[in-house]
Image (cartoon, rainbow, N blue to C red; front, top):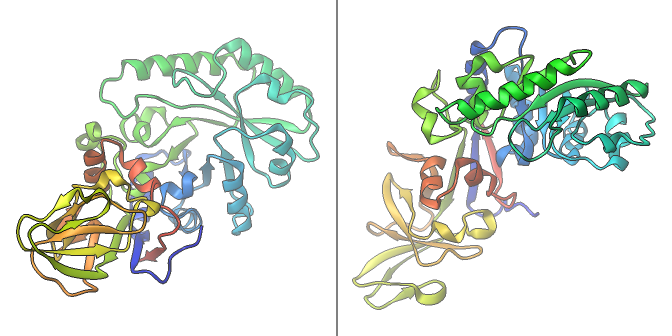
Length: 368
């Protein structure tokens, strides 16, 4: 996707916020527990390469991604000797590519290992489905079979075993405890304990520090976002959001009563009012459901009116503004703040989706 450097719409990523979130989390960890920065999905919309650099500077000991392509992008960007784990599925025919680039892969099916001809050593992390219901082996018998298969291939090493908690971001812990018990049963069934046992995502690492094992996968909270609204007041430290989204007014005009705006003419002025057109739309991740939400102009709330278009959005102004005036979509302006959580609540979704939706058409600018 082409990045719009010549359009007055941009994202600012505060590196200092990312560093602060990592360092605060590291203070909660025993010295022997590694923090791996989860930078999948373009670092949750924050920019994979620059976030990875910042995380490494802050002390992250490795990276987790969703797909092999993300891991290769990190290697190509200069992360030559860093630990990188692909959490998602990788095709068997790409195993050699991962091995040659010293990228650890997740295995969640025994048959994936069948007839695997490797030209270089490959590190494997066994995924356990302890109750998430997505990927993973589900029994101690499967785990032992995979362990034996790996032992028969000199090019394979069982480097790690892990699971993912479905309800770690909830205060009620009964299902979490069920998952932990199942994972522990499978872990203890192995003949040898792998180098890395890891279960904790951001929520688990913040609320259940006893679950840290050998490493944690620090994702959403590295970006200063709370894993869920429910646990926000239970966190051991305050998270500092790293992402802000800005644009500028490219046209300011006065509507007369009866004037309508945007597709479908769903908004019609009932009195004289000032509106502005913003150069951002659903192709940038500001989806149509944002209609009716608000932005900040000089710290004042300005509602989004009419339908959000592919490339443009219209807001109602509290009074006349100059063309070129700055607009805050996510961030702080004159003491008022709109957070990704605010947007998520309006959209009936989660903060993860709000930032992941922001496309690469919006340039990222890194500060501090």
